[in-house]
Length: 568
Image (cartoon, rainbow, N blue to C red):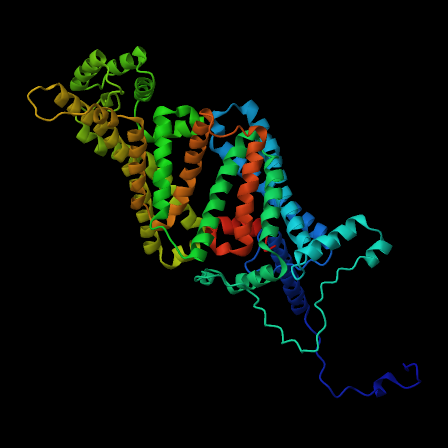
């Protein structure tokens, strides 16, 4: 056989180099590595859509088209995540009680939990907020550049909106100083960050977050975030139900107050010691007063939660409210207490005496019918509340440990378990002490009134009891003061949890005070615009703090805003 050139194939020169033919298994292994690397890369990209990594840089927007696209992408992402979270929570809550429901309704309820109106409302609320906030925040620096005076920005905006191109060319603002032969001094070096008086807590921010603060102060002004947050918040909250709007607005309002106060106090250099406990005590004073004497100023769901918490018969609440407010009571309430099988004989005797004299309060024996001595009531209340709240607080402390701190739990399981157990014990003791303190105050007011009344009726005593003192010990301010004293039990709770508990109680206290003032005609009726206006005011404060001083917001609020809104 010959080659194409006419030479025998055997005479072809062999290659002096070694040749290597890869095995099929090696090629397949390499291809698998490439596929695995691509899969992990796609997985990381997909994870970024759901979870934003820490230290994401701010996005520079150069024109309005980029601004609109940036806002639309963020709004769609936020709406998708909000829909998934709301549907997931609804499904979990439904599955927890699905055994008690009829089988013919289960599929319809599951479908409603996954694709009901609540999920779409949550998606519309968060999606519209993120989209509008991003668009307004990033459009304002384009319309009002930070390196130009406000007068020139307004004139340029007027020229863009109302003048033609030829008129715009002649519309020139000359603010240049007059020429002079004297050379001007070199411009002072501008600082990238405005440092306010006092020590800023920049150490709480990461290096990437501090770089973001440099960008914020170069590109935006504080009123940009205030306006963007107010407009976006007012429109977004309108997608939710009216019953939920007030809860959302209240929580956002107190978060805005918290961030604004922290920023202002640091700038001015003052601090209120134990301010979180003070806020909690003031809120508890209003809540307890409303629960006993003005229950219409509290949401019904919150009143029902208070009924379960204090572990007293509901008859004593209605009887006490009627005696303090109107001087009357429902005899059926007293009859039900007297018919209880666990009623102590001494309490039965005291209730008959109370019915004969009718002092201006509900008898404390109705609150503890099975115990004759008031001094034994606090211990009984503490044990009852502890048994009720221990499983709840145990789940709140141990579930996050197992799901979100698994690495730390694996390294030191005994230490982390003891830490969670100690936190559970402190939280349980906090609520138990809270209820026990007010139960003792409730009994103490009545015992003091009985003792002073007996002293006033005794002619042999040299002490004259003034009528104002007799009325003061069971007056309405005395009820409010008892609630404030009850709030001091927050000292039992861990310090890092006091602020969150204060922020939980403050909205209910403010709502009760607002409703009471509105009933007396001291504040205006806001109607259907009240919730959007409150949300606008709240989100103006929240987003101003988030963009300019994020370290002053609570960690939970800051992380949630970062995941949904991003750096800008």
